[in-house]
Length: 140
Image (cartoon, rainbow, N blue to C red):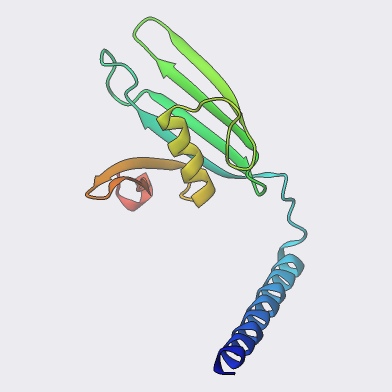
């Protein structure tokens, strides 16, 4: 009997939370207008040194993703004498083609909404991405 009461209270709380979220979305839509889920909204740039001969993080992967997780990853590998550019499609946050680790990081950062310019940070738990400080805020 106690389990049923706990389940009923949890269901009531969940319904109230859903109603609150719907109210927030309705107010946001009224204030900002309709939001197009297919419009590009999340962009992240991941810069790195792809080749040992080139430093200065001149190579990059740019993920441009919409609200459905669809979009593209544009990658430019810059060398001393040539540049190669690749574009890969992304559907629901995944690509049908094999993504490089840098491309995966760019997609991940875009999906997390970390902003247009991210930088990798090594932690004890592995690689973590964080937004790069803007020049206006005194960062690099």
